[in-house]
Image 1 (spheres, rainbow, N blue to C red):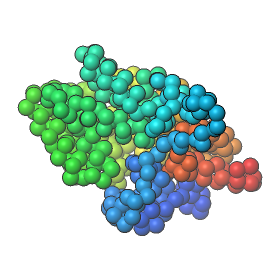
Image 2: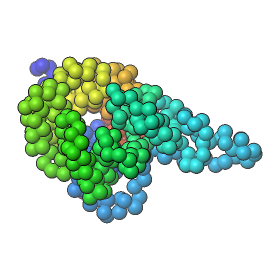
Image 3: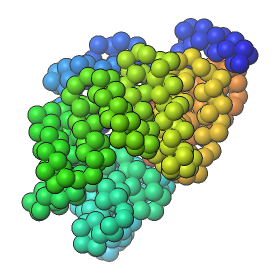
Image 4: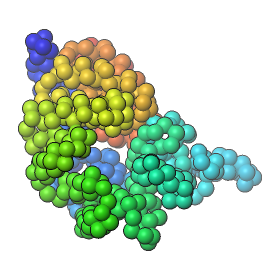
Length: 400
């Protein structure tokens, strides 16, 4: 432990001199890192230090230039037959055709053309799975949010458009559990996209409908958590929901609430308490879901980032050494979670003075990130800067 702390102290001094992933808030121009700045959920290009900066930048003109990530441009059509023209463009993995609009990347773990699909084709498959031929034991949200091939979450434009398609498919139908879930998630995305009034109204409506239908208490608690984290004191709400789960003697629900509490504590700057909450939540998730379940892995990556933020570099690095290959294998080599874990891992290697392994890790994941994400995505920028920093420490030219 002492050696971990000493290497962390040296790494902290080095990071102050030349931060490996320093970038600027798009509004106030305050320096930050890929750990502290949050990307615009629509374009993933603009980065902000807080919600106030994001709203000011949106009103100040970002809304005029913000475009969803992942749109595949229609290539110039060659001369020749209609069949030749049809063969020339990108093809949807489901319907095997191009068309207008063209198929777009799904943002999941499927590589290259295997991840291209029409939003309408993905939506039709999800409608069949959840509305026309539902499995009562299955989570009704998964066909709309997880790729059926690689089981990784959709990202970017595909993610947003499928949640909207879910809401469009059920909003005029009977008010049931599917209706409540779709309303809650589309409301949450509307808030993230800056449509605050519409999103919050929809979230409140989903909560009221769930109470009227007497849906399971855990679902009602999750809906309230999603809504309140967008509108109020996240830390106070997290503590309230944790106490409710403890009172209900719900072990898994307590773990989920501790996850939320840990994130809220980290955002409030209460690092030690936040790390402790995330560690307890991680143990609960592993007990109930297993170490390789995607939500468990997502929580583990959150924990690695929290340990790094709290200056516990040795513990964070040990966790990343275990997580990086596991996340890559389970959720896919081109998943956002894989890139996030690799970014933490590479930065921790740099902080401990292991620059060559950091270079190798950055190069391995940067190539995949450039295939899967928009060119100016914050994770790509962070990996490039980590790579350049590590190469400089080895006396090599950047991007050599």
